[in-house]
Length: 467
Ligand SMILES: Cc1cc2nc3c(=O)[nH]c(=O)nc-3n(C[C@H](O)[C@H](O)[C@H](O)COP(=O)(O)OP(=O)(O)OC[C@H]3O[C@@H](n4cnc5c(N)ncnc54)[C@H](O)[C@@H]3O)c2cc1C
Image 1 (spheres, rainbow, N blue to C red):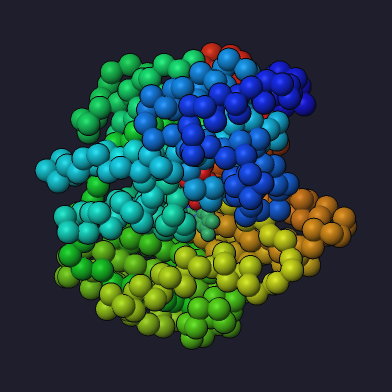
Image 2: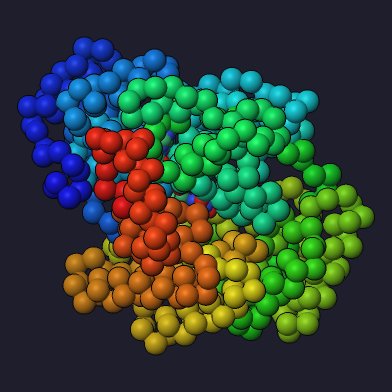
C-alpha cells in the first residue's frame, strides 16, 4: 500500500473524515455499498476498487472544505465526473474520499459573440449541446459517451469523432478554475483566444486525471454549426486500403468532420445490434463532410474518387438529419454492441494513436497480430487522427486467456510507440497504461513526477494513477 499511497491506510483517520463529511454535508455524502460500487471503474477488465465514501459538493467553497478534510486526515481524494473513463481512472486502490462533481452542473455564461461558454465541471456534453441548440453554436468534442462531464473530459484530455476537424479538449479549453491539493483556488488562462503570459497551466491540468487538482470551472470554445453536412459509408477489401483512403483525404485537406473506421468484425456486430444494413464483407469508413453546400458536394465527389482509387465502394449518402443521426448512433453504440454480442465475457477497450502516415502499417500489423493470436478484439477508430480502439473480448476466469489478452495490449502499445505514436490517444493512462508511460515519455516521466510532488507533496490526489 505504501508504494501506491505514501501514507499507511489508517482506519481511524478514514472514520474521522467520514464523520466530518457527514456533519458538513448532511444528505450529500454516502458510504452505502451500492453508491460506493457505482463510483469505482466499472467499464473495463481492470479490478473494481470502490472508495470509502462519496461526497457531492455544490460550490467551490465546498470543494475546498472536502480538500481540507482529506489533508487533515491524510486520506486519498478521487475526483469523479460520470465515471465513463476506461483505464481505471476513478478507482480508489487505497480507498479514500470520492468527490463527485456531477451536482456542480450549472452553465454559467454563454458568449455568443465570442463563441465561448463557461460551465461548472459536472455539466455533461449532452446537457451543454442541448443548452446551445438555439444559438447556432455547438461544443465539438465528441467522445462516444454523451454523459461524460466537461470536468472529466478536460481531465482525460478527451477527443472523439470530430477531432479530425475541431481538435480535442486540448484545443478547446480556454481557461479553468482549479482547487489545488493545498486548498488554494487558482484561475488558469483567460477568455482571450491566445495568451503568452507565463507557463501554460491550463494545459498542465488538461489530461492530469485528477492527480494535480480539482477543476471547478471550465471556459470552452464553441463553433458555429456548419451550413451543410453530408454523411455516408464506404466499404473496402481490407483495413490498410481504408487507412490509405483516410490518409489521402486528410492530406488533401478535404473538409472531413468525421472519418471513423469499423473493421469487418466490428461492422458485422454494429449491423446486428443497431439494425444498419451496410454490406459487411470488409471494413468500412463512416464519414461526414461539413461546410457550405457547394464545398461539401465538391469534397464528397473528391472523397468518392479517393475511395475508388483504393478499390473501395461508396455505399450511401445520408443527407437527412434523421439518417445521419441513425448512422452516428450506430457508431457511438459500437462499444455497447460488442458487449451485447458476447454475453458473459469481460472486455477491455484500449486505444493507441500514431502519425496518420503510419496508420495503415499500424492497423495492418494489428490485424495480423489478432489473426495470429486468435484473440477477439474488434477495431473501431477515429482514423482521421491516426487513432483507433480495439475492444478486447476475453474470459476473465481463464488465466491463460487473461495473459494472452495482456500480451496483446502490451504489443499494441509498444507498436504504436515504436511508430512515433502514443500508447493512448484519448483514454488516458489511469491504472491500465501506467506501465507503458516510461517507454513513451522517457526521462520526461521524472519531470512529471516532480510536477506532481510540487503540486501535491502529500500524494493525496487520485493516488495510483499515471505513475
Ligand atoms: C462508450 C464509450 C465511448 C468512449 N469514447 C471515447 C472517445 O471517443 N474519446 C475519448 O476521449 N473518450 C472516450 N471514452 C472515455 C470517457 O468517456 C472519457 O474519458 C471522458 O472524458 C470521461 O469523462 P467522465 O466525466 O466520465 O470522467 P470520469 O470517468 O468520472 O473521470 C475521469 C478522470 O478525470 C478525473 N476527474 C473527473 N472530474 C474531474 C474534475 N472536475 N477535476 C479534476 N479531475 C476530474 C477523475 O479523477 C478521473 O481521473 C468513452 C467511454 C465510453 C463508455
